[in-house]
Image (cartoon, rainbow, N blue to C red):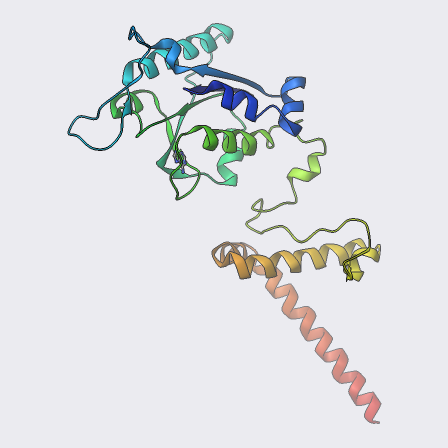
Length: 264
Ligand code: ADE
């Protein structure tokens, strides 16, 4: 996966993604990152990239020309390196976009190249956005000072969906949002900490019981914190409730039988 980021602050992107798991993936070449300085493409002799908005209003806007030329240079470079590659998706990160989520991360991880466009100041001239952006994406309902942090968030989430980035393939699977559910609580040594004991069932060695317990914990947590996700899961997993009802009925029957034989 090759990430290309068009930004006014390239060092923020390259430094921010250099550590830990992504740092290792970059070193190994599992993912590649190039941060391109939009300012390098301005034709303005003072290296200016912004101007006042027509119609008035607060702040400055990034101008179309440097953004377009930076995009064109990157697109041409990708085309030169890859014979026959189609048009590369250009993701403009903006609070006006669709909200980013796990399924989107998974889908984007299947692309070979992605170009991200970071806005600054009050945004970017709409005409260049119309011309080059294929996707408008927001990372949530709040406004940041620029697109660099959203792009880093997205690159992190997308990268961990790229095969080989996570050391253990398993760790990408059984986690929050993969199936609408939030992850169950996890514990490591010591067994008792601040007088709190690790749930007994996790020490039992009974994998089936551990899996059942984890699912119940995930369901309880999701229902409490994110009821809309719980409803989605419930809709798609009706057989779980049928199985659960049958199990409870069997347990009630067994208990009634036990009571009867106790009374005899
Ligand atoms: N730029 C500024 N705020 C943003 C947000 N919430 N998501 C994506 N890009 C942004």
